Length: 246
Picture 1: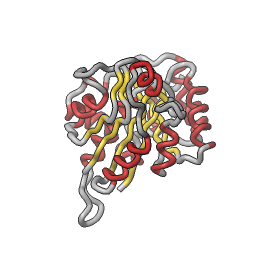
Picture 2: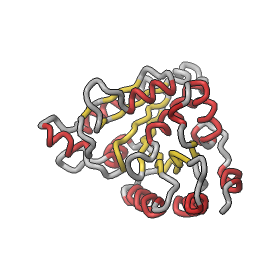
Picture 3: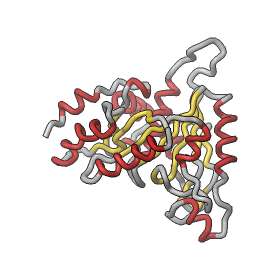
Picture 4: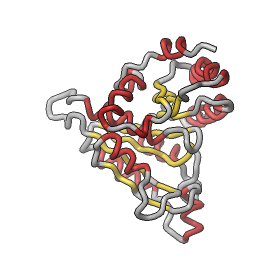
C-alpha cells in the first residue's frame, strides 16, 4: 500500500485533473499479490477553499472523472484563500494536519493507493502554526508529484518547488504538466526541455487542456496516454518533446 501527495507550483495548474488521472489508472490495475485490494484507491483533499457549502468542489470533479466513491474532503472554506487564512477570517477551525495524517494512514491500510491533493502550492499554510503540505508529506513519508504549468514563468516556479522538496528531504515522484494547450506558443514548447533540466529527469506526463470536461471512458483513455509508466500510463516524454520542438 502506498501514499502519493500531489502538489502544484501554484493555483489553477491542473492538480485535481492530474490527481483524477492517476486515480483512474490505478483503478484499472489488478492486484499485485494475493489478498491485495486490487485497484482500490482513495483520494483525500485536506482542505477545499473558494467553494461554498453545497457547491461542487475538487472532490466532486475527481468522482465525476473516475467514478471513484472513496473521495474525502476533510475541510471546506468558502473564501478563495490559503486554508489558514480562510479559516481565520471566518472564525472556523483550521485544518488539523495531524488528524489528516491519521486519516491517510488508516486509508493506506485499506487501499492499494491513497492520493492526497493539496491546496495551492507546496508551502501554502494550513494552520496558524505555519504547517504546510510539505509537513504532511514528511509525516506520511510520502513521495510528492509536482503539477506545473507550461507557460512563461514556470521554470522559476517549478525550480523553487523542487528546491523546497529537496531541502526537506522529500522524494520527488515526478513533474507533470497539468494543462497542455491546444495551440502551444514558443515559450511553452521551449519550456518542455527546460522543465526536464530543472527536474533532472524526463517529464512524468502532460495532460491536454480541457481534460476535465471528458466522460469517464474518454478520460481514462486520455490519462493512459498522458501519464508516464511510473504513474501507470504510456506517455513518452521524448516523443512528446519531439512533437513540439520550437
